[in-house]
Amino acid sequence: MEDSEIEPLEQNSRSKSSLRKKIEALLFLLLAGLLLAFFYNYQCKEIMVIDGAERLQYLTFSRTVGELVQEKGLSLNEYDKVLPGKEELLQDGDIIVIKRAFSVFLNVDGKSREVWTNASEAAGLLREQGIKLQEDDQIFPALNHPLKPGDEVVVVRVEKQYEVFQEQIPYRTIRVPNSELEKGVVRVLQEGLEGLQEHIWELVKKDGEEVSRALVSSNIISEPQDLILEYGETDINSRSGRNIQIKKVLTVEATAYCPGTPESGCPIDEHGASQCTGFHNDGYTYTGVKAEAGNGTREKPHIIAVDPGLIPLKSVVYIEGYGYARAEDTGSAIKGPAIDLLFNKHAEAVAFGRKKLKVYLLVQ
Picture 1 (cartoon, helix red, strand yellow):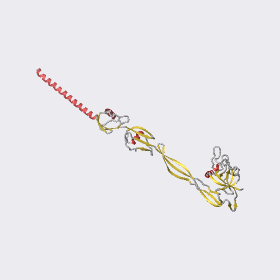
Picture 2 (cartoon, helix red, strand yellow; picture 1 turned 120 degrees about the vertical axis):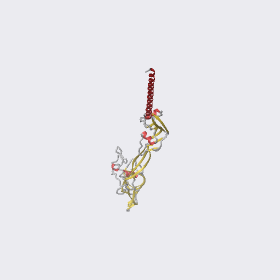
Picture 3 (cartoon, rainbow, N blue to C red; picture 1 turned 30 degrees about the vertical axis):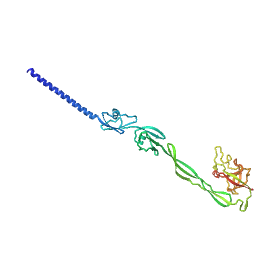
């Protein structure tokens, strides 16, 4: 075969080889494009970001929320929140919410401070700050109040306490006339006893300061017992035909005392001295008779302490409103026109108080 016939065959073979390579390259590029398109569609995600009133659409290859925030340059301050969290993996179609923090004032227990919050309502702010409300606590504004920058939320601590108070109920004094007794003579038919009443008060405190108190209940623990006195109506100058001779009439300041013994209920100090008779509290008078109250009759007259310079000891007197009495005692405070009337009980002496009375000094 001649050389002229071999040359066209070689050229034809080279042409087929070049065409094959071009086809292979084209197929490679097509496959690479398909792979790239598949990778892009698989890895690229469409994400919506809600930032306040803004709604932003992003295409991203970021794996996590944090990477997206960094990739798109979304500026966040220390207190801003991203939901879901920055570590969460992204999926196509996810919605990311940015909650921008703002400052409000929180006043708790009377102390105010500025805080940053993402809460939309006052209740959320308290949860963020770990503030727990007690049953009676008050919050201003209400828990469901929408928050905005610069608002003040006030928590007032309300505490209720109860106090028990007891007081004495005074007894009544009932006077019964007796025509058989001399005028001015008084006898005790029934001792008076004070009753006892209990009150329960409710105190309301706000932030530790009392703002109100109200009476919740009142109960009588013991009823008082009336003091019943019998008084005479017969004229002093004549009783059963007996005349009484008056030596002198005095207007005196009358007080009362008790024997000063423990049985009388008289207060005794740390040194052993009683309030009424001091250290002379052995139950006997200055003249040596037993310190025992009388009833105002001639047979059992009252005992009085006197100033011996004005009313001699052992003198019998008649006290207007109280009957007969005998001067058996003295006292450092009894000077001049004054007498001290003996009662068996300290409470009776206190109840007597201080009075102006007429005293008739009788002829013995």
